[in-house]
Image 1: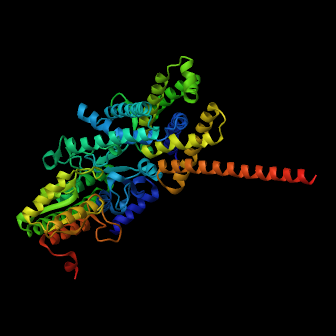
Image 2: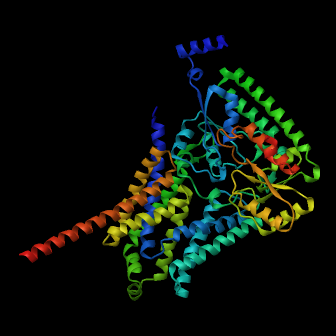
Image 3: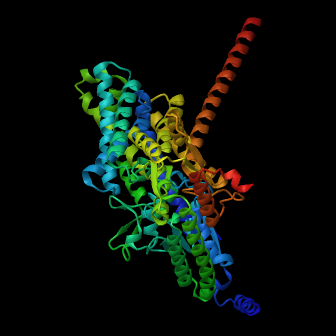
Length: 306
Length: 305
């Protein structure tokens, strides 16, 4: 018996996933253009250090403490790899790899030194499960009698989405110049360092809030895949951003239907759908190219025979 | 029996109480709890577990269908004591709208094992504690469905008698092993309660979580203990990769000492349907046989012939 209550659950899940997907897609566009696509993956590992340090300093593993620790370490990962890249002229993927493996390893050592007997890893305390989002609600006031305000993850990611969208809308021209023509930006008197770090703050915030809502693998997929699909088609930054958002929303809807059909993990199904959309785009592009070649060949032939 | 059937039929026909004919929908987290609830509710409930057969709770991934299992359940039972990780606070929030019960809820503090303020969640290996869990399940079922109170009470009493028998049996079996050799070495610390209840020393390579890494120091210490106490077997677990324990065995053998893998123990999950550990009681028996034979130096194969 289908009831309205059950549909509302689906709606909360899709709404949360859509917001996560859109935020990741927007941030992902800049990561792809700056050749830092694996930043999300890097942050997903280095947050372990943030969680452990936050636990050791604060003495509890409450979610808010863990989130703060994770965002700060995420920021440090992004900042440090950026600085290492500029300072040492190492490639950006190499510097990302150096920083996150270092942070992750320190985290592992601290876990085995200080927290041997408790369950403290990012899988347990930070990464969320999208299927449980509708049940994890914010309650205003008393636990027993207070009002239920809806899923916590939804509100958190709504705030992040708004911040990301506003930042990109307001800073669009600056971000564009800094991304495509850094030297021009310098000559125009734009503070490049500020915008680099501003972007990295957005990345860290988005990834950590998304980890909490949907878990790590989906975040990494949503940061890279929709933006890459958009990259294949777009002719301008603005168009790439819109395309990336469109691809991300398509992945969420197709993925959710897939998970319903197969009774499988929602996050994995969305990630697979994002990949399938990318493959489809590639195929369409190849076919169009092939048709165009045939067309030119024909024109050439008819030109010769005339 | 005929009377009960007739009255059920009567109530169903006039539709006085929907609960009388509709089965209770019960969702539980682990296979062990599903087994426990099924023994007490029998055909009065449809029991579904979130974590499938052989799934380590640390590595459980939810599916789309789990959303429905949770939202449509009349009662949700879970282990508690942080076994369900991030799911636990969510389940606690659901208590506002549903009957959501941790089977360990009313365990006395003195019976629990504590590590820095947090409890060890693997309570099911002390069979007498699992009896307390059976009590909790019976109480909840009775509150939710008072009409079948007598039915639940009878089932619970029967099952608890079986558990009690099992508890005594495990005690006897473990006492057959000489005290000095009563050391259980496995890949992770899931057997704390087992050791406490049946007087074994328990040592593990990993911490409480199966996701953690272990240190070189841990391996060295274990090796020293094995050599000093002349321990003949260590054990692998169904839900943890055997490679850590295998490397420990090779390390000890390299020093010229006899050590073998005593067999596979079920720790965080029961065995697959049709295996010799597909119920809670069978799982405990399998583990006890394996541990006893391993530590006494017999092979499990000899036992079956």
